[in-house]
Image (cartoon, rainbow, N blue to C red):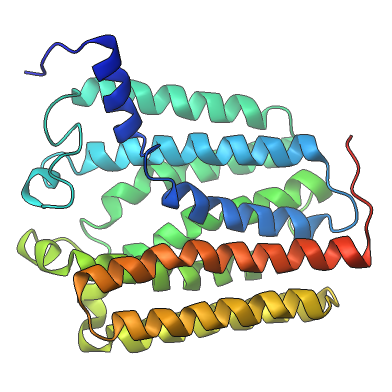
Length: 298
């Protein structure tokens, strides 16, 4: 039975349930969306569309976190890192969590209604991915790949929003995001490897075994190769590739952290991926700005 909470306690519990106190997940979801928007419309950004994607990203990430904790409510109490989550501590009831997730998803859908029909249709796929991902680690040996699709699906949606079509390059960029997600979420999974093994959960850290560090670096390399290929396809300039070079330097730093396989170092490497996404977006946006400086409000 859940305890009776004051309004402030309930708001605090909702904040923790939605991970608003830990923005790293929202940022890892946001960077691919921004890449997609700038690749899809390099000359002129419609700031209403950009705002819709930013707000929608935060709402869907929050809904996804609620669904994740709902799915893991019987596992989280047994993991030190997650034992204090509201559902794990039974502060929030499962039914209340489902209602919260539904409200957040509905708000995100209301944002999408301002976009074209194709983007609206793709949003249903995005919702399905977000709702089903938390259950993947029950049976799918590489849930990190599924996460990459869910976190990167904003890329084809961005192309749809601007171009009313999804060109092949959008799916290639989505594939790049899958490799990136496998890399950074394996670093995250390396933190929970022992707990996942005890509870018979699936993760890339367990699947890759002693090859975990090598495969993380391979996935990072494939991700950067795809982003470099996209830059060449769009004939981007020096600033973009400087951004990729900075991302490479950050990834080399991650290698030095995760090669020890120490929990704190692996978590530090995972968190560092926010900066990888940021410098790539910074290079992309600045390259377009200085080459084609036509940014105006619609």
